[in-house]
Image 1 (cartoon, rainbow, N blue to C red):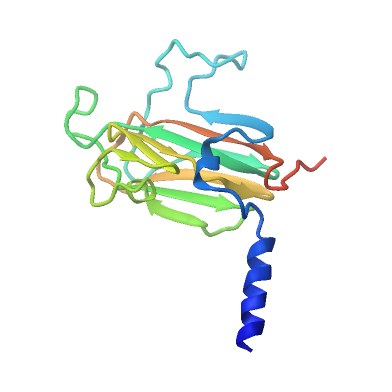
Image 2: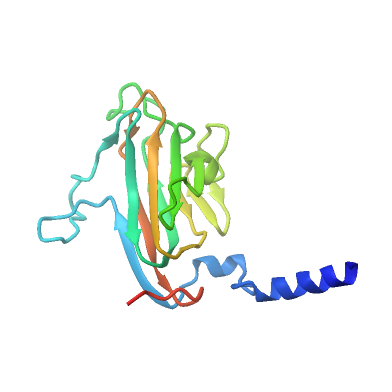
Length: 192
């Protein structure tokens, strides 16, 4: 019995996709088609206006902001976000929501319940309400306020990422990029 279990575990682990992939591979380019969903202001002709600040907005207490809503198979390859800290600021005289008061939810493949649900601080390894610098391969929080995640998150039918303001203050000036696409490295191919 013990030998059968050991053989099963070895065969099962060898069959896992990406078995030889290391953490260093998370940030390397992969063959596929890349796309980006961003908070950058879009002009009427569909071009991004990188020279404007029209994309600055707030998320009011109790409100939800959708960062990504895509259909079809693919994978999330990188998430970047930033927002004002909780301390008073010229744009937020009474301060803003801190990262523990911003709930991050991710839904895969049209499921009604979130597959990932965590405060932004916890998801980006900055717990206890303290903004701090994190330097690792899968997560980087630069200067404690530029949140980056390089975990590859595949999906088959759809993906939706949203943040919910659970504070009594606005989420001040949230900016984000979500890089996603079709990757051939995980065997995910677009449906024709």
